[in-house]
Amino acid sequence: MSAPRVLVAGSEGGIGSACVDTIRAAGGAVYGVDAGTIDITQPGGAERAVNQAYDVLGGLDGVVHAIGMSGRRLGDGTIGDCTDEAWAEVHRVNHESVFRLLRASIPKLTGGGSIVVIGSALATSLHRDFRTVAYASAKGALIPLVRSAAYDAAPAGVRVNLVAAGLVDTPMARRALGSAEISRRLPELMPLGGVACTPREIADVVSWLLSPASRRTTGAVIPVDGGWHLR
Image (cartoon, rainbow, N blue to C red):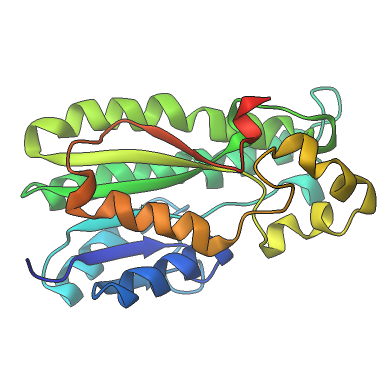
């Protein structure tokens, strides 16, 4: 089998960068985009990214959506505290951009292929230290979106799956990881070892979902969270 050709959106972020490294280490070819190159959160951006990746790589076998943002600086918080600005921006980046990338990608993968979306454990498992209603709801909305896309894309042999990441050691998690109080509670959140997941641990599962080894897996929500979802 030839080396997979993969578009990684969010290639400069912690998880996205780890995905790029992991795919390349396995022999794959990667076309990475970020807001500094092509902003897929803007109308038309997803189509440009997919078309450019297809042209540069000579085809497309896989797509990874690893773009995400926290809305805390805009006022994301509890249902009573969340601002209109935080709600709109967090949903635009974390939810709407996934829809646009799925819509643009699936026709380019009609010979078969795999799309992986990075979600969050907060979509289904809340905690008092992580009360961000806009972020949780935007990530939660990815589950039916991914399942719908997987159903629609299945006749073309295209698979769509979601990795529900727990607390991951990335710049976006700096606030939580820098809190001594939260650190003390991590064993409660993650029974499989109370430490943050590494970007590589997320990327390893992404790599599996992109590979033929997962060829019968689609529409799945796979937690990589140290057991966070078991609470």
